[in-house]
Length: 120
Image (cartoon, rainbow, N blue to C red; front, side, top):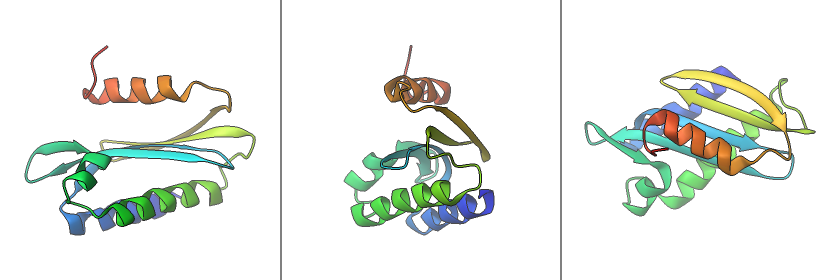
């Protein structure tokens, strides 16, 4: 799984996006994927902002999100009964599971705080 995630992230480089920090929340029926990446030297921007600014086409961003969810779902670590959480933080990939009823807003908020893009 790690190699597939790294390969998918590497494809963003053709849009000038590098060194991404990513969070993916994946279940059997849904997924939420977002990332922050560096563009134009040292600008650290959120993935949807990159699409809104025309740096990456929306359809390519959607395809990237879907690819990440597919990789998670085909991983031997994946659980249909749980919320599967994939993170890339400074190049390190981690994977964990939580109860499906976990508060995804809190998970995303804690992740953004850890990146320094949101204050407490």
